[in-house]
Length: 394
Ligand SMILES: Nc1nc2c(ncn2[C@@H]2O[C@H](COP(=O)(O)OP(=O)(O)OP(=O)(O)O)[C@@H](O)[C@H]2O)c(=O)[nH]1
Image: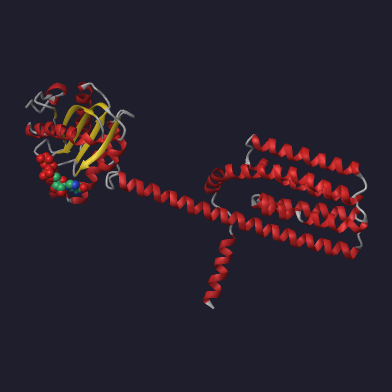
């Protein structure tokens, strides 16, 4: 019993076609190219089919002029559709034009049926009944437009039959039945195809999201969101030339963890990472978490003074954050020590060498009392002395 209920609920759930509006617009954007391409292809197909159909009608009808005129009308309409589609119209114009293209066929068949011998009428009427099939199976109009198209087709045929058809009432009833079944089938087919397309779209979206997430996890640090080592190597792949490597390390971070707890330590690292990221000047600069509480910045420059300026900017920015660190001997606030080195990046392979040189400078900064900047090799930059008060030169 429950199974039965669940199946019905699932089926009704599947009947829903609509995404929320934002997703609807995204779906339209994602599928519009394929749709335009398919519609154009159908336009060309319709041109070819019109001519094949015209040959058949020529054999059925005595009146050649009306066949030529009807063929010409459909030709012009098909070409018009193709031209409109080339101009990349919005969804309303695009779907309406295609729907009108189908109706054009219906009208042509209705007009021709006026001139048909009574014994051929059923052929033409069946052709009319097949129009909604064409819509659903080949054109695959968006569902609301398919509904409008089917209603318009059935109405056109009903009015045409009532006013002009020479068929007997019993024949008219069977023809109407065939058309109704065809229209229902078309609606169902169109709904099913669009439903599939939507489900596929959602699956594609989910897999793209997963791929992005995998990429993010592989190349970014989970805690701070900045690049990790692997991400940094990828960002540097293919780059070569002079650069400045800046290595920053949070001072007395073990004490911070011990004093405030590991979670607070995590939050502190996140704030420091965001702060360092804000100090980057643009495309030529990359920030990564090198490990634990160490951050690395690569600056695409051959001028050591740029490295000195950027390193000092990082140091003072972190200090300005004003994160309390009661266990730190360096002014009861979180601070970083920074070392930088100028070098040449031949490939991502010699990155370790450059980092090693920056690490030596960082070591010098730690030796100098922390919360300061040093370069590599011995020529220390007394940053506080140069940019402000406090830490002395090593
Ligand atoms: N909360 C937190 N702590 C971390 C993380 N990664 C590394 N640490 C801690 O960072 C601390 C680094 O300590 P040390 O290498 O001794 O350096 P320090 O205490 O900062 O001292 P100096 O660098 O010499 O100023 C260790 O206690 C690590 O546990 C992390 O992701 N989160």
